[in-house]
Length: 258
Image (cartoon, rainbow, N blue to C red; front, side, top):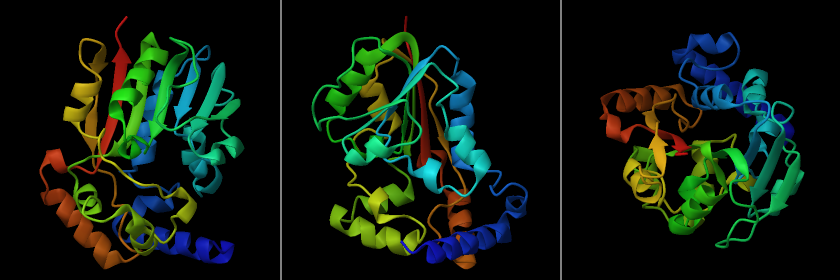
């Protein structure tokens, strides 16, 4: 993407947000910012001696592209814990700047880590892409230490955006996102499956006999408003009217029982 166009797009997005969220002018983020809510809670769980896995880390897009320094810093674990490993099925992970170790993992195969290898696993907007929840949940459970944390953010399966997305073939997602989120790069768009992003899914694949659940739904500022203040206003009204079960994001915090 042309850097000048991208910068102008970000500036326009900020101006539109400030129409309804004047606090954006003090730090660059809204009071509802989902990344700050999610990563602030993850940071509260970190300890210096921890071994952390970033599952589905990709190229580290937010660490590279997020214009808000405070938000970038919240996402950074490297240097704050004993070891950060980034893994993904995409070779883009090999350039991820937020890890001590990086590796490409095979699709639909076991993870190349020992049992009880990690104290904390973080996975940001990955669970909606999982096509084999039985395998993924079993492997994450296997490599997480007793007492360890699984922290994931994913679109809620029953939010309006997810419901619409499920009606559109994956081949059309890039075109739609280019229109709805002009600042989103095509390299960061992946096929969705929506098999591991509801509370019912979590109860099924991460049973309470093995995990203690601290998951909650969250409504951040709208992410899809076409850089248009009128659309943003409409999305805010829709979000206010929807029942809690249809909130946009699911913030997953599961602790493996000892």
